[in-house]
Image (tube, rainbow, N blue to C red; front, side, top):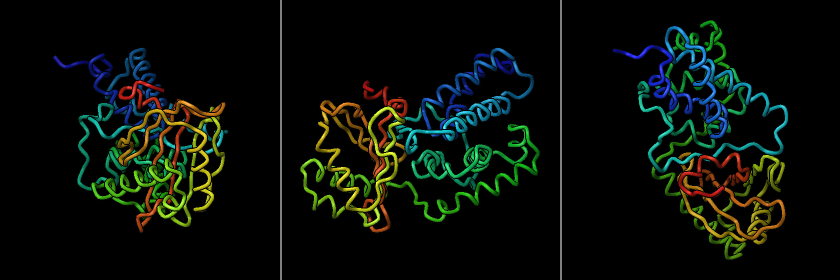
Length: 309
């Protein structure tokens, strides 16, 4: 006998999909946890009639929009995505997802740092429609049902969303083995130069227009604006390296690319005890972007493996 819509078994099977959607919608694993849990709790309370997934999708999208609106009213400093491990089985991804041949963005690309940052240029509605159409491969009709808006509106919102991330589309690079290998090599060399205080070696790895971005969520000391230019980025990172003592670190694949996960034992007051650092290469293989996440709320997805916050 099949389970009725809203049954415990059906809800449990829907959670990976909800989590995957909520993470891409908000860019934060902790928010995705809360949204998925709340959507499932509402389904248990209300026992929706009819197909369950469209109903859950609309609830999750509405909750995600609330998160995005609150964040945009006044996030302290720069916003960066929450690190998500992609170097182990994706237990929080929908196992039943089978995209069509013409899907625009893969599940892996859609959790990349570059993609999630590009989504920040979209309104919450545009973000939801783009994800449902171009990542989760829903038809216009399915998106219309899931979001409770007309099909013509779905088409207009989708068109505007694609236009808003045209710059990303023009420069996107495949997250393949070659990019991962090159990124890892550059990251290891750069970290080695910083650890040894070799400013010249570190400078050779930076692009002239390099930028550094930090996200502490207002919790710890961080640059509130991007640090721009090769020389300023180098001075900024050397200062960070000098003032904090890393007690443990590992290189992991986070959001599709190698990244540093580090625990800090000795540090000045209000400095983060833990951080994640990504590097992004330009067309010449030089480091064009350094992104550092320090806020504890952003690091919750790393807890199962590292056991530290």
